[in-house]
Length: 198
Image 1 (cartoon, one colour):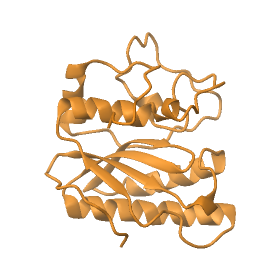
Image 2 (spheres, one colour):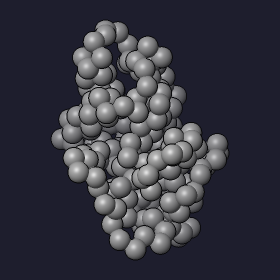
Image 3 (cartoon, one colour):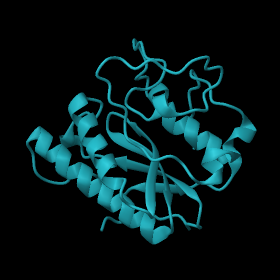
């Protein structure tokens, strides 16, 4: 099991998890890697103690917002997701070996402001990394942002291009991610999260 600095996890605390990949894996913001990550998300849906409710795929790392029953379920759920994604990524690019670095970073979310900041950080992370430059999409297509209902001044649903397959995430059930975060206002489509946002 990878060495990880675990948060003191309380029941019903959502958690922001960051997973970094080895440099040899290459850039994740490609359709082939997208499909591999989505297949790993689909495989994780059967778990009752661990749920990925939001995700963004960046060039060399993933951001996940998860719900876990306890610290044990968090560690096992992340480990199972890493194994599933790693197997698929290695097979897709024709390599063997480690995909994710030994340590993942996890931060428990315990306040309404913290939940709102974490949502903005994950869903708009592409703006922080300037991946939005020259892109016609209003939200990051390499994230679950297209399914997020809390955007500011959204008059109509996003129109998906033909053939687009959204990332498969579970619906949030924890109060902080369904209702509590709204105390601090909807998230702007152009909001660029800072280094301390999460």
